[in-house]
Each structure stands twice: as C-alpha cells, then as structure tokens.
Length: 496
Image (cartoon, rainbow, N blue to C red; front, side):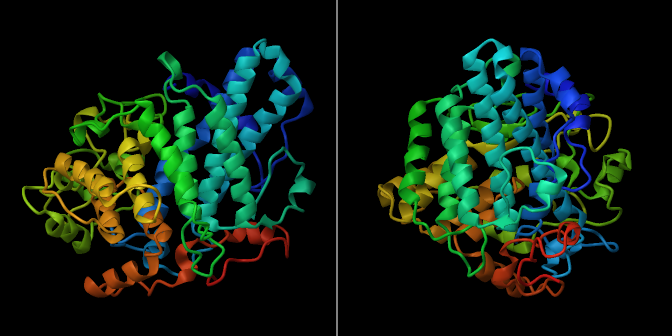
C-alpha cells in the first residue's frame, strides 16, 4: 500500500477541508455524484481514509512518549510541548493537542463519508466481497481514530455518519462507555470481514488480526482504573476477553517473534513478521517526520548534516531520563541489554536521546522525508499484553508469564527473571517499547500514572515538572472546540 495510498492526496483536499475540527459537512452532491462511479473511485476513497494515519506517529510521540517518565525535555523558549512535558493546566491552546483532536476527527470524517457512499452507491463496485472489505477497512479506521480520542480526551462527540454544519453544532460529548460500544462494534465487524493478510501493493492495509489486536487493547484499556476521571479506564475487568483475542492472534501463526531486535525496525525489513499494523511512508513521495521528532538539531550539525533534518525546535533537547537509563542497568541480570544502545544515542556528547528510527544511510531529502514505516502494533506487544491479562487473573500460569517475559529478555541479551509481577512486566515493556509511544498509556492502563510519575519526579529531583494528579491522565478539550458554540462542551477537570 506504500505506493497506492499517495494517489489520494488530491481527493483529501476535498474530503478533509472543514472550518470546525469536528465539521462533518459532506462534500457537495455534485462532487459525490461525479466521484463514486466505479471501483477505482471507491478504492481511492478508502485509501483516503487511511491517509490521516500519517499524523499518528507524531501524535503518539509528542502526547504519550513526551508525557511519560522516559523524557525530560529541555526547552530553549516557549515551545508547544513544554506544557505537555511539565503537566501544566494551561495547555488548552497547545497545537499538538488541537491537532490530535482535528486529525482524528478528520480521519473519522473520511471513514464516515466512504461508509455512507458504500451504503448508497456500493453496487457500482461490482463485487459484494469488495464492498464488505472496504466497509470493514473503514470501520477499522473509524474505531482506531476513536480509540485514540478516548485515550487522549475521554468523552468525545460520537458521530457515525456525515452531518451538516448545523447538525454538528448539536452533538455533545458522549460518555466514554458509549464511544467504546461503537469502537468494539466496528472492530468486531472488521475482525470478521477483513482478510488475514494481503499481497503486493495492498500490504499495509488493516487485516483481521490487526483488528483483533486493537480490540484486545480496547478490552485491556477499558479494564483499567477510572482515577475518578471520565478517561479511558472503566474498571470493566475484561481481561479474559482481551486474552481470548490475543490467543487467537498467537495461534494463527501469521506472526512470529523475530530473534534480532534491531531487525524489527530495519528500513530493509519493513512489514516483517512482527508487524500487525503500521503506518506506511515512502521517501520523496510522502516521507515520515517521526524519526527526527525527539532528536536534537545539534546532533545533525555535529555530523555535518544540514539542520533541515531537525524538528524545528532550535537548541531544545529531549534527553532520556536517568530513571529510564537506570531501568536498563538495574534490569540487567547478566549481559548487556542490546535495546538501550539501539534505542538511545549513547555516544553523542550531549545528553542521550531516542534515536530508534534513525538510519543516516537511508535519510531522505529532509527531516520530514524518512522512508520508514511506523509500527503501531507488533507481535511482542501481543505477547506481553497476554502476560498482563494473566497477571490480572485471566487463564494462565505464572510460568506462562515468566516464559513470555524471559523470551523478550533473552532477545535483549539479558538474564531470566522469575515470579514476574505487574510492576516488573510494565518496566520490561518500558525497555522494550521506548520510542514507540506506549509508556504513558501503559502507566494509565495499570493505574500507575500518578504514583510512578511523581516517584520519578522526586527520584530524579526534577524541578520543572508539576506534581501529577488524576485529572492529567487525559488532555483538555482544545480551546477552539470549547469556543465554537458556548455550552456545547464542558472542559475536562483540572484545566484552565
């Protein structure tokens, strides 16, 4: 799909143009009538629904990785990410937050528009099987975008069809439980109707196992604590449901545990057997910016490479925390953990930083043109989430948990552990997935966000970060949304 997805950029100029970020106003009747006239038109439109995924890697690095105890950023001025990293209550106008709202709702808008066209004009495709597949792909994407929104904002407006501008201004934020109901329905449909795999230019599309993997994440996330905040956790105790879908993925033999950690992220080994779902990029067509996001500009200039490969934040830096570094050291029973030098720049003269996705030999034309896919969900995550379910009381044994964790540790070149606990597991996930944007959501899901973050702030003697309180497990509704129609939305507690 790396090539086919880029033909829809022109279409998106029509589909995504909207003055309000939630604006579900459909394209004009004339444009719709003229466009959806054959299978190729629908294929381009479905590709368009995928295109908004391009925003996901940057979103998850800035709003999850940056939020966690993996990074203690150093600002050279008033930067948008400052309040994210420091847990400021005054972040309702921060661009990363408003963009996350906008980008996910634009993705939902694209999916809804195509789903509406499929229900009214799908017969022109000439294949009921393709109509079903396109429908399943769009429902997967809608669920994915809504799951992002719930994790970020808690309650959000639930929209499942194109609406006029006036109709949009009547849609209030729905309870998280109601949004989850739609997410689960969409993912179950996708899991039942998508193919197990693709070939050729279709590689990269959502599969039935990608849908099952995200569904398992949904069950696991819903099972987490509420923090007395209407966020992603509902205390629903659905660990058995999550385990069931994880076991289906494992039993499918579609995926495997790669023996070499670095090979999972190799530019020459994309879409490998670890990957359940990723965001596709191609240099000189539409490259990625996420490899440069957390890399200081000084790194590029020290190598004699143009600062156009930087992230636009001048002399700001994004050092990994002493706590993270010590996690690798303390966690090493024997040998050297190969994940640390792969994930983190250790030879740079400044503070170490995440360089997981950098391969200088593969660089494109600038820092926004890296030809590497971003892995959203991989097989190691499925295995470790299975262990997490077992530790929460789902079917399985301590030996199963220890076996999974020690398989991961053996690949990293470190010794085995016994009697792995939830805290031990979450720390192993931290070492395994650093730079993949999972740490913050892991802490929230396990009820550890407040205690772990405050312990880190005290332990590393951080003076620039405010105390973390339960309200901060989700972000504020962007100010632009609050101001669009007075009284339609109320702000999340704890934000100004």
